[in-house]
Image (cartoon, rainbow, N blue to C red; front, side):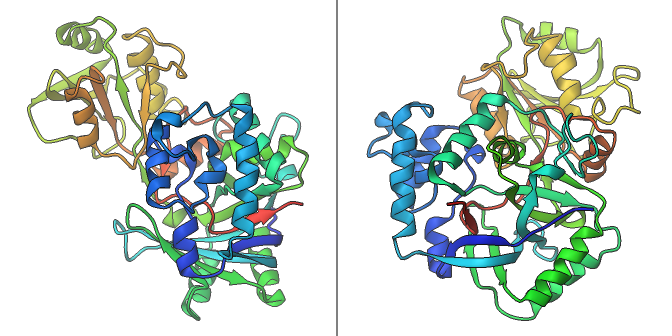
Amino acid sequence: MVTIRPVRRALIPVSSDAAQRTSAPNYDEFQSDVEIWELLQARPENVLRIKMPHCHVAKKEEIYAEDDPKALDHAEEQWKWLRSSGLMQEAPGILWVYQIVSPKRPNAPQMGLGGYGKTAEIRTPATPNGCIIRNEGIRPEKAEGRARLIRRIKAYIGTVNLAVRDDSGQLLAALEAHAAAGPCTYEATDEAGNIHRVWIVRDAAQIAKFTAMMAAEPAAYVADGNHRSAAAASLGYEEFLTVFFPTKRLGLEPYNRLLPANGLTRDQFFAKLGESFNIQHLGKVPPYRPAAVNTMGIYFGGEWSVATPKPGVFNPNDAAESIDSDIVQRLVIDKILGMPDGRDKRINYVGGNKDAAYLVKCVDDGQYDLAISLAPVTMDQFCAVCEQNKFMPPKSTWFDPKIRSGMVMAQLD
């Protein structure tokens, strides 16, 4: 049984104009601190000035280390500014319906129900029967970084994306009916053209109806925000800020790699690759994105090739081992390039908000020697990993569109 609770002291934009000005992508959607700084120059009122305060500086040369002690002081100052800016208002005891309309899928908007999830329901070694199932490992230093910010400002800005199967379809139908019944409370359009709409739910009967629907779900899977939920739990809070999305409408994009060749020539690389993969060389073709899982595009030396794993190199009955990211890490990045640690700084993980043309540019510009283009993980693969109680390989799932930070926040003081 999955629990959702109303947010007791929500902080929300006063209007769509305010939502547009203050909301932002989450910090992990950027490739660099410079990208964050550039967005802050274009829209200086957005919540990244709080979430990434080390980038809220006058010149990009002034960007400092994220863990610098002065960052938290600045974050607290900016949080006080936002609360008193006239752009936000308190909304006590609310749930919210969250719709994201993607230009890629305009007729199938992503629908979710926002509120508080319970940290006690997160499955951990101490709570093995928890119904909120994480699917990736936690980096303690990253979770602690999020916890420090929460502790200082006494608020949640970032939101955890939880997926529920909704096999009956009743939750999705109820969310769509609520959205169709009247105009949204406010909306904002993100940098990729996705429209984010929020309907604030205050009616006690409607809250009870949605709560009962969530209680009918046997499990929820963390689609995005493992570290944000871990941060809340580490601080001793009973709840964390979340949106529950039925899996039928969740979209996934690829998570690609940019890599050094570590001294290997193109011929040497492909000779080693042929031990575990069947290879087809495509030559100088347009930027390539695989159409199906277990098919990998490789850009090296100005040309594209396609590699498919040979039988026996992974266990198809192991949901995690069947994920392309795991196959690439084990058989290419570790075995061929000699980088067994997925946290190696020489590996650049490129999220689904960058396309294959971006990979080509980075290689052609000499920043990296080769790129690996993958197909998106499927929802069936994602759920299978969760249900086998395994972890997704690192940097394997890029849910798109993502929840926009600042659309609903929670005050904890």
